[in-house]
Image (cartoon, rainbow over all chains, first blue to last red; front, side, top):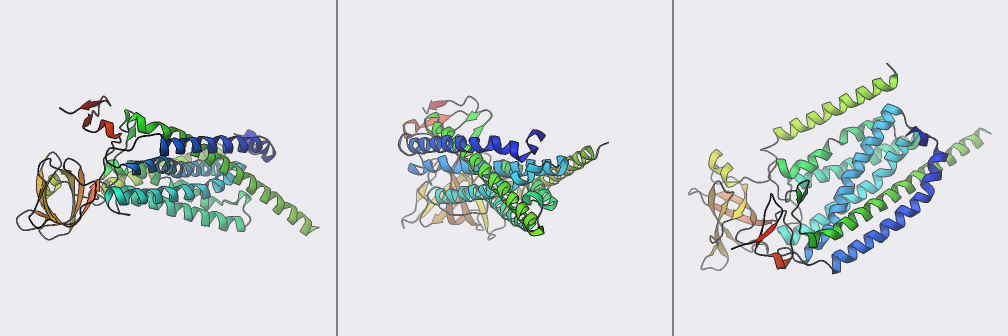
Length: 241
Length: 148
């Protein structure tokens, strides 16, 4: 991993990769969304509202995956002092928060016609809302440490916060198993899927598409932060004269 | 031992302790964090009449009866272990029907009937097209079979 400790080497790979991830992700997402809207049949019970699944599930996956990424970056920052780890953690936070918000909103829109309520304080919904607040806290801490001139903009305290927040990820995942909840149990498990194949396949496309797009956003933000650091360093050199 | 290894051990130990604490807290919350009580919970622990709770389970097939006033419904809620009668006046959600999940908010009356003030339909984890309606999903083989 320390091969990429040199930002120049990282940028040489990240620059072309950004475009590939972005356009292939967008294509997969559009094809998956179109198929999910027009090709798959309606659900026997939910009718057309089932189609929100093709956005809701990838958003939930990336909201939780994003925090897992923050935790890994935090570990690399604290243990190996990897210079890009802080940049990566800060780059993941904003899209992670965005996808968590999309997950909460689409879930709420689906809940109204299906359950008969916009919001209930059950285990799954509450723990997902906590994840959203964790993201906001992480972003605030990272911004504050960036203003204080920490390299890459994530202080060790912020990284520790990222690591501690990871406790919530298995709780979200298991919330529908441990506790009676309004949210249904897991549909897709290691043993198979209780979503019929004719409804399931576009989910694979949007899941991959959103993930690639997420990767592209993270790379873009990492490049922007690195460029910002460069500008900052040059300005300081100029100021010193 | 290098400082790097010290930091790694420290970070991993902290992570294990944190996850352990999280899991302990979650399991201690088991009853309190439950969104609803199942009929079996009510039977074993007993529910005070008049105390506001949520009752969740399946609506027993053939138990749904509409009263003469047109808005009051009577139905039985079961979790496979116990069954309790419930009644509700008002507009039930579209997905509320016999054989599917329900979460009712309300309280028990003195005779042990659950008086619901609000009904929520609980969706299960099965998703399938209309053509497959009336088929049963087998949890172990993941196959659909037509109901007899």
